[in-house]
Length: 397
Image (cartoon, rainbow, N blue to C red):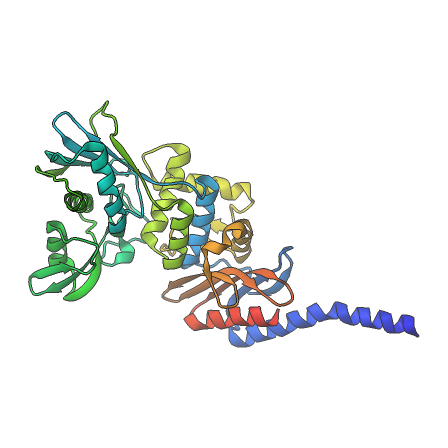
């Protein structure tokens, strides 16, 4: 008798996970019957697989793949560099290195360090070298618009290649206490900015404008630090044989940049990082082709060549295509760095993606009975619904 009772009890225990899985599957089917939902446990066992075999447009969850590739190639302690040179006529030459975080706060650190290396005697001019990036760089999905999310990628750009300002009539003032207003910022905002406060991208019609704006802002911070640019700001290569007098290494390492990327979902940062991946392994100047080649080689190494198709690194292209199982595998590979993603109150880590007609959510969820599970959600609408699905996964698994 006791033998039969023990056997029955053990059989009942074996049925509990299946029953729990059936409950969550029913919940998901009721909430999003047409949605794609895949949940895998730490061993790769499928806990939920609804419409999971259909390729989907990832939108900004593609940034998880870019972050993983960057950690694989560059490493978390990698730092972007901007190089400064001074010639015999005391002209300051600046060579951009694609730093995605060359923001006003960074320039406030850069300028005093530069003057410590060169002295505060006025420079007779400034020449900006953006040759690390091609003169014409096209990123699929990026449109020539005034929107900040369409900002042009560049070897030398400041504040994500955008201007944040306030316009009143023909007067333009900076909307940021830390950012001085410059002549190019004023003319660009008068020509293309909204009335009142707004953030615009620099024009793509003439990429040199964004580099020249970077030069103006660098000059403003040099003046704030006690130096001066007496001559013109222009574009040109660094003269052959000239050695750098100062190399500015970004104060944030790559791990911190990726955390900010995954937090704010900045397309400009994502593709600056993605472009650096190719140049780091194949040499500069950067090109989208180099980065796609490197990405595809790494994906193929992990058996993901058919599961993850990238056109660029931010997710802004609708031609990016993932499978749910492919993204789940990347999440497993990225798990040691999961703390870089946003966190729910329950401790789950996640990244969202949003397009017209596309709502995605992917990450690593904390559950009661299965610990950490990888999840991928893709819906045609309902931004809040994806979080209701995540809450159900946390609660019922």
